[in-house]
Image 1 (cartoon, helix red, strand yellow):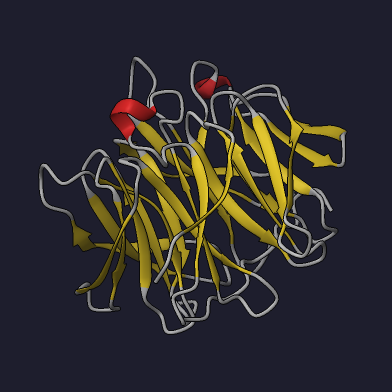
Image 2: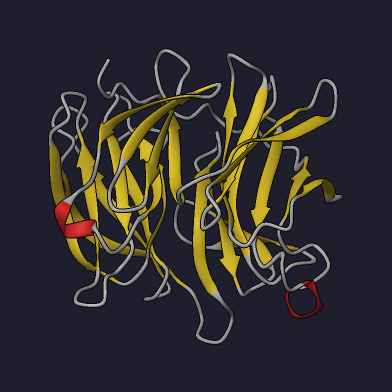
Length: 285
């Protein structure tokens, strides 16, 4: 598998690559600078399309707009320059921000937050009617999420604890239960960050400070390790018309001497494995 460097905006924390099937483009963010980028593989053109407050993650809405999860717990809709605020702030999250989000099959969004100076992070669920529910507390660093192919399980990453958990997931209610460890990464080899699940049910997990992307079988066995020219590999996603392109973000772009020559860039690889489309959010629609 050959890595192809698609774009390099020297992202401090490149994250949340997400394929937009309506547009045939890939979007991704640089979290702390609030920059949003997009790439069109048909033309090779890529561009920055937004800069502002930190963006911890985003989903694609049913109508094609992007739903941005930002600093202070703010949630905003963005569509080609137009921004509408759905949630101005979450009082308990005024000193922190969202970090990694995913829409579920019913249009809800599971959205984690970073720790504050007083407490650890949380995992919330935002329902289409705007109701916000705290699902988990005491999270070190809330990170990568993904669903099992049968939609009965939810993967969830706590980077600080070096663990990817697997929960039972109730599609009807959005509840999660039966928390158990899917993968615990070795100490001293970086921490698990963003993830995605392919069409075969295998988990692809980016390794922050581990210079690699890992593929795990449904039983948690490591079956593939793909090295990167960047220490901080942050998040993978599948895209392209056939979902055979695997896009991967990295971080550390302002310090390539220490973080690696590919730090902060967006990469693409074609592993010969198909992904699946991500679900769309229905918040406020």
